[in-house]
Length: 572
Ligand code: NOJ
Image 1: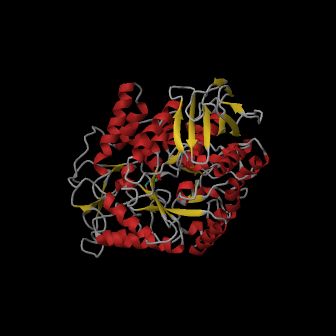
Image 2: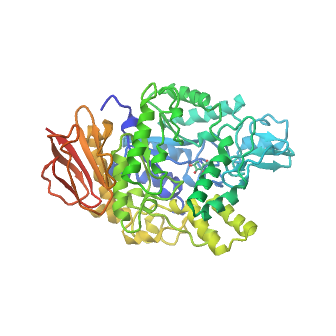
C-alpha cells in the first residue's frame, strides 16, 4: 500500500464552508465552526478535506467570484482562524486542499476595478476586452457573455455571471499574479488544489459564433419542456454546441504544466484535482494534474449495474493508456448538483439506494470524494419563495422566464427551485435542536434549514443509532481503510451481463475482495464458482449491509439480500 501517494489512498470530504458549521452564531458557516467539527470528521473516517472557496467575495456565485485571493472572507473568520484550522487539521492527520478559481475573478476584485477604469491603465489588458460583441456567445449562467463598461466604452467577456469577468491568461502578468496567490497558500501548508472550471480558461481565438437557434434562457426552457426522445437529443446537442467554442481551447495544457511545476517545487506531494472529466489533463501522468473527476459516473439519471460497468470499462481503459498509468477519482455529488439521496433515489427505496451508491464510490478503484451531508442522508430542499434564492443563476432564470417569456410565476418558482443549486447547499444538520444545531434557535440561517432534520437526518441522533446511514458510512470507511484490496486493488468486473447487480473484484497482491451491489429488491442466488480468481475459494464476509450470519460462504451458493452491499475477502 505504501507505494501509493496519499492522494491515491485518501478519502476526500468536500466542505462547503457557508453551510458546514456556524461557529459564531450568525447563520453562516465559518472556520471556527469547521475547526470544532474536525473530531467529527476524524470519527467519520475521512482523510482529506476539500474546501470550496473561503476567500473574500461579493457572493454573486457563492464564493466562486473572488475579490481577494490571499485572504479569508470576513464571514468565515480571519487568516489566523484559517491557520488555526489548518494546524488543527494537521494534528489530526487530515490533509486540506483549497479551491482555485483561475478562469475569472469577481468584478469587485481590485484587478478588475483597475482594468475597467480606462483603456490605458497598467491592468487594462488583464481581462478580455472588445469594442463590440464579436459574436453571439452566451454566459452559461446569465445570458450574453459580453457586458458593456461605460468607462472604457468596451465590453468584457465572462463565461459565468457578469460579476465574474474572465481573466486574460495570455497576459504573463496575470499568470504571475495568480501563481503568487497559488504559492501564498502552499507556503501556509495546504496540500493542493481543486481546480475550478479549467476548461473555460481559454476561448476559441477565432471567436466562432455558436450555431444554436436560441439564447441561454430559451435553451433552458426548451430543455425543461423537452419530452420526446428527439427533443431530448436535440437539447443535449444544443447544450454542447452552444458552449463548444468557449471550452477546452488550446493553451490549457501548457498552463496546467506551469502550475504543476510550481506544486512540484514544494515538498509533501502537493496535488491538483481538476473539475473536469477529461483525462488529457493528466498529461503524461507526471506533468499536469494528478486527478480529474470521473463525472461520467454521475452523469446519468439512474445508477445501474450496466452503467457502472460501462463507465469503469471506458474510464479505466483510458487511464491505463497514459504513459504513466492514471489514477481514477470517483464521486457522485458536490455543491453543484442534486444530492445523491434525492437524485439517485426512486422515491421508494431512497435509503437503500443511497447506501448502495455510497458503497459504490467507496469500493470502486480510485480516490473517492464525498460531499458534506451525504453521510447523514441529506436530501435536496425545494425553496418555496423566490426571495429565499441565493444562487443568482436561479434568480436570473426566474426573472427572465417570467418577464421575457411570460411563464407563470408559480411555475417559474417551481422550475427555479428545481434548477438552483441552493437545494443541495442548505446548512448541515448537526442535531435535532432548532435550526438543526447549525445555528442557535432564532438565528436566520443564510439558506433555510431543511425541516427533515427533525426526522432523524442529523448527526447527533445518527451517532447514537447503530443502524443509521452515518454509522454505515463510518463502518464502510473503516473496512476500506483496513483492506489493501479496496484501497489499491485492480478492478475486475464479473458476470458482466447481469442487470440486477454489479459484481467486481478488487485484486491486490496481498488480498482480493469480491464486491456485490444488489440494485434490486429481489433476493438473489448467485454462483461465482466459475469466476476467475474466485473459483474453488471461500468467501469471508468483511462487510454487509444486510443481516446475515458471520459465517463464511462458498462461491458456489451465495444468497444476496434485496439491495444488499456484500463485500467478502476471497480466501483459499
Ligand atoms: C464550478 C463551481 O463548482 C461552481 O460552483 C461555480 O459556479 C463555477 N465553477 C464558476 O466558478
